[in-house]
Amino acid sequence: MTSTKNNGTRFTRLLQFISLLAFAVFPTALAQEGASPVPEAPQVATDPAQEDAAKSSPASRRDATFSDALREAGPDGIIVFCYGPDWNRRSVRMLKSFWERQEVEQATGTARLLAVPFYQNPTDEQKAKAQEIARGMPQPPFGVCPSILLLNNEGKIYASLPGMDYLGDESGKLGLENIAKKLEAFRKMRELLAKADEVVGPAKAKILGEMMDLPITLPKDIDKQIAEADPNDTTGMVARTSYKPQDLLYKLMGTQDGFLSPQFEPNLKNMLQESMKVIQNENLHMADRQEAYFLLIGQVRREEGASAHFKQLINACIKLDPNSSAATIARSLLEEWGTSKASQPDKKKKDKKKH
Image 1 (cartoon, rainbow, N blue to C red):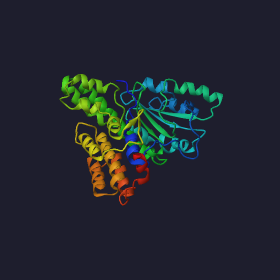
Image 2: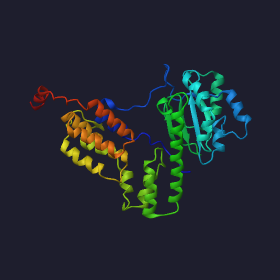
Image 3: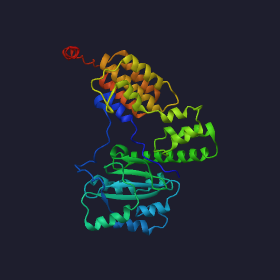
Image 4: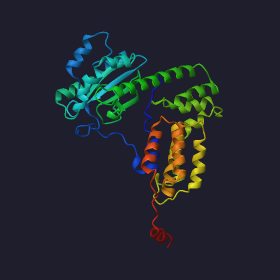
């Protein structure tokens, strides 16, 4: 299996933050019930009762350590439940109410299952046990419990579900649905990679390009593979993988040492022309095209308020992909800003600038 890297840090959130002001979407900082922050490299340990239960059933896919899970991992890889025994009571309750339920095994195919506690203040015994259970396991890309990590059979993370926003209530019903979606996408990626290995040229690029909308981390060299297979970009997949949303943002909003310039005043006409080139390019990711809409929505809102133009852009953004997270945000903006007027510029400040 090709190694993967986390591409969850795509520029989507920054674009939405710049254009939508207070509507930025940030990851949940910590879980519920007044937990203090997780250390940067928290110590982990395991519950002896869990370990005994795992060892007592030879047919079980529930492992006691990451090393065990990695050794036995098949095509569906490894799925890890992260909880905080000494700082997050909800995650501890979810061991019984969610993670240890049979429904989890039914929904995870052949994946190995592992529960990993993350302690805030481990004892010496817990620290020793931590080295045993977590040896070789990559550090989670978040400090939230409860959470889910999904890894391939090489132990590389291809998706994560951090916090209750992704797991739902303590029954974990939403978590099961999200695990199933990520696992389905992971299987689809494997299927496409196998097909791509059987062909060359543009046909290979086209197959690899089908992976680009999968909601998981893709092979780190996928863009290079596509460019080598189709150097003339007859499929449009090279443009799709090389497009960088931040380039459009910086071009239209101005930059100052890599940051947006607060003094820059975007030209709406120019922004409309450049953004529409992205929006109308069907080879690009749907999310990239919707991000281009957000640039326009934010600027029109500042200049025109809740105008017909503003509402037209929001509805067009939603229509591109009604079930996307971007569409959900767009609906919220329409509800929040749909009757608001644009703020008037401070004439005094403008006069001072002229002088």
